[in-house]
Image (cartoon, rainbow, N blue to C red; front, side):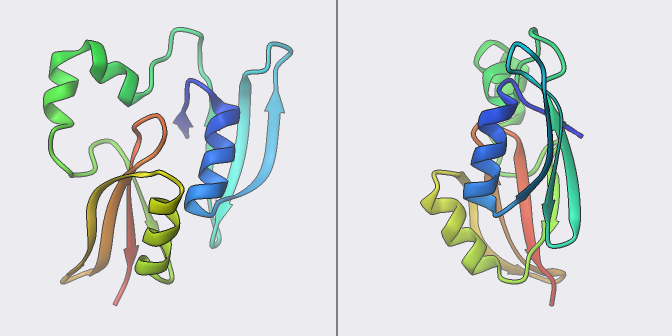
Length: 130
């Protein structure tokens, strides 16, 4: 489960930038998303807007010095890891859609990876296993 200030915009962005497919969306009368399910290569994530007071990571670090400091590194902090068939193709799609790139594709002992932030600052690591 991942929270977004604007769940509807997040769904559209995750579909366009990261290649998710929307499976389900429950929208409240005020337009907020109370539950949504997205799928990527057999894996699922759930998302919602939990309360009107919720702040995504990007918004939170604008007003919190500690969050700003811990986000200064390119690592995935409280984020998600997703296996992809081709890191390079996925990277090109995400970059073209405006994802904030934290690290370019690189080989590691456990696979080829890159790291990115979505529109609200959630961090993602995409890995192509060897």
